[in-house]
Length: 290
Image (tube, rainbow, N blue to C red):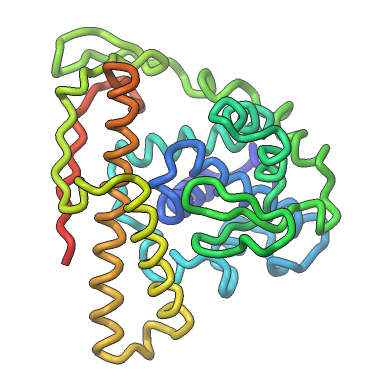
């Protein structure tokens, strides 16, 4: 099955996977996760069994010991409308590897490393640095280029020419009235919102992005250690630790999201909200650590 032939249910499942794995990494970070999934599907469709024998979207997502969110319960969120809208942007961006590479290079990633990221079939949130060709982006280390499994670079980048339109124009342009300002806007041109509209309320909101990344990485080590054991076999102490660390991890990632948005506001003086219909909204990060 080609990417363009995926069902709505398949697309939603992939977007939920991207949110569960990397919603704190922004649209480009989520697009890299989706892109690596697309590459993985190409590998299995080519005849390799490196990631299982089932090349369907559901078969790959739920393949044994592949994606942690299918085991820890985070796959289904819950995800709000804004998060799903960003995941849709990431999905569209991933469908155009050439544009994704351009976005990576524009953010400061070298052309060589951007290409390696585009070719990856997997990622590790805490390790992977020792593997050949491993490249870090945000909180993930991307590994295992598709070319290791016989899939050519041309096959990967051919998805760019199959994309019916660019990421910016892939969805129909819709007109909407912003309830906050009364102004009319369109989905391709969101109304900028002054940073005075930003409201961050998070116990970890005073930490720098670097400090948050350090704590997120430490928590991920704890969670990965627990993932080695089926949750059905958790002791009461392990179950409580899982709940506590998972809750803190979500709060830390929310705080990191807030830092990134605030950095954008400081740099530009305002933030253009990226919502499905162009509405503005306030960011409310009100998550308490347990």
